[in-house]
Image 1 (cartoon, rainbow, N blue to C red):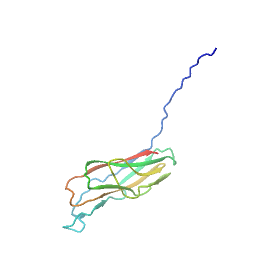
Image 2: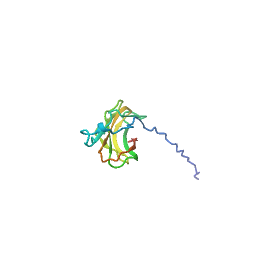
Image 3: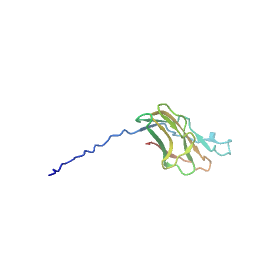
Image 4: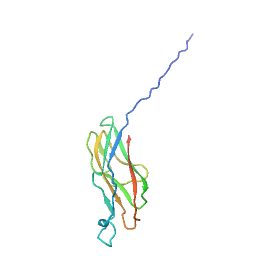
Length: 156
């Protein structure tokens, strides 16, 4: 005669470390003045304004090592922005650390949905980001324009 037996499986959650991102810097209080006119009084504005090359700094940390791959996505959330000025970002350098980094070396427009910006592996620190606003002209209504850029690290 067979005797019944009971098998119990315990499912334990596996705690996985998450890759983290730290972003510092901003481009607040950018003012357009008469100095931004392309050719002095009576001319239009210079069509673009570009930040310093180290306007924003990104650190990627808590990877599991130099082979742990990730991607940084970027998007903006407009407060008062409009559709005419175009905000773009570019990665200026590789920062420092193990692993590798690629992509994002050309100015890329930032939209209101996540777009892939650049990718890499391992921990990286001091990645400098430059910002640019295009389509500036006197046809823009005077006022304050505001948007927030969100950088998200995705473990790939």
